[in-house]
Length: 451
Image (cartoon, rainbow, N blue to C red; front, side):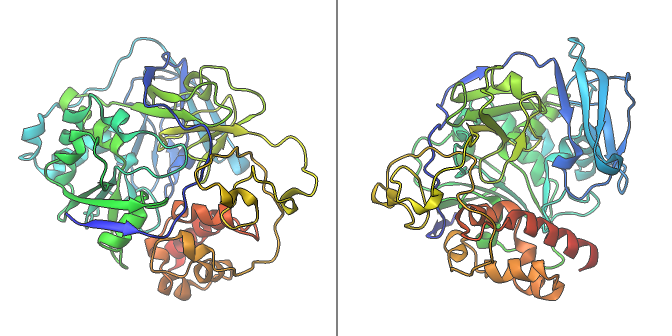
């Protein structure tokens, strides 16, 4: 076991962290699966409006690999298929019928998984729809199931703002988590790496006593918990590699798939943020409505974000939680323009630099709203990006190469190692208000298609 201490990064000091308590949300009346949550696929519908489905029945699949199935989290009726520009598929909404019927799969005990052929395990995960929880590096896309990954990485160290508590997620799921790890160990010819926070004394036994994995520990400010940052320090991605990543909740779901013989779509969602009606963990299922998770009490002046405030996706109050996220962050919408804005030395505004006097109160938590505190301007190289990206790359040079489409330079500057979430803090600290995550996603797509 190796320990990595990262000195670069920044922890956003934002009010509204969730308590380490958990409650069951009411059973959702409907759920939605959104193809936009899954990068790198071209979706094709497998159902029509009015069709009955079971939990685990395919709703759509990938045109490029029909084995990649995206399945319904509950049993019911397909009531709506939403499309966007150029009829791009956006959401498939399923209304629950209350029967809780599931597609059935062969159950395999945790120990027996270690003796089960890889093909059997992979096919079961694919048919259940659980495979779509994997994300491939490079490119941060859904992996090609026909390619054996070099390694699989799991981060059990959450460092993002208003983060969920890993111990709450794992409590009562220790056996399923280990079963999931056993299954993952059969999917790669390399190793399964599990990382957690260094020096944390109350960490769940599910992590500290995990078997069939290589354990590493990390210490540092956000984004030290990002799996991409951890891969960079443990075993970097090189051209031609295929590395899979997966979050702890999905590992639990895969373990339950084999133990119970049915697909499990349970999610523990941390509801947090200044405008959240309560701050706690909620147990629900994937694709649940925001209203169900937040108790139908969200203020009209609050912005709902599926994920954290740095890298999440904005959701309407009538929207649904994204597939990969274990957070619902709710912060105030800015109502009016502020007089002189960032020019006032306000001690109640947080700043990475010393623009505001808040740097004099290093332990104080601050209110954050949706304001930009400035507008887009010329891209100024201040050297601040390098202070929040704990990787041996040049983030400003990489972003600029993407902006003018130099694929060769992008590769040389490390685009194969990063994902948009790894640059989320750059968006926050950028004096030029450059949307680095959007630019990086565009660069990854350009390289994948033409590199």
